[in-house]
Length: 139
Image (cartoon, rainbow, N blue to C red; front, top):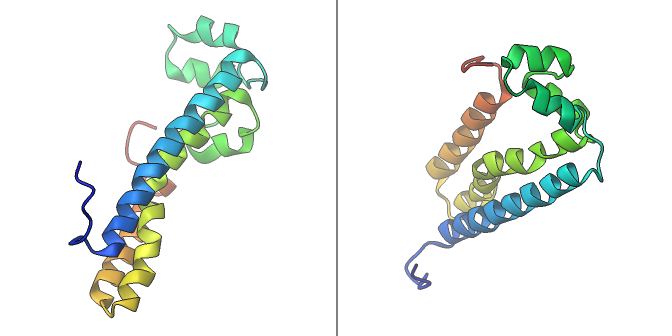
């Protein structure tokens, strides 16, 4: 990886630095929350012995017997060890959205409104897709 950024626009350097450190930070957060979960320091919503019993069952059975919400319903249980793990995953998945936000101001400052508009639209599309409104996928 070359560290010569003399020809790279500053907004691209900002984006890549945010993405780089955000991804590594997300992975670190996932590791910490996983240790908290498996150590028992944070009580899980579904006990580990129940999870292992339900491994061979269809996901519908796990959701029903574990009283586990679907979609963004997990957010209500964020204080539970097994759902606390999701914070790092969500941060990792949302890093692109977070990285686009400062680009809007940078492009406006450079008087490049088309690129600023593209950044806004990118944020809106990604946020819409993450919202679950579309309802695609196997959930």
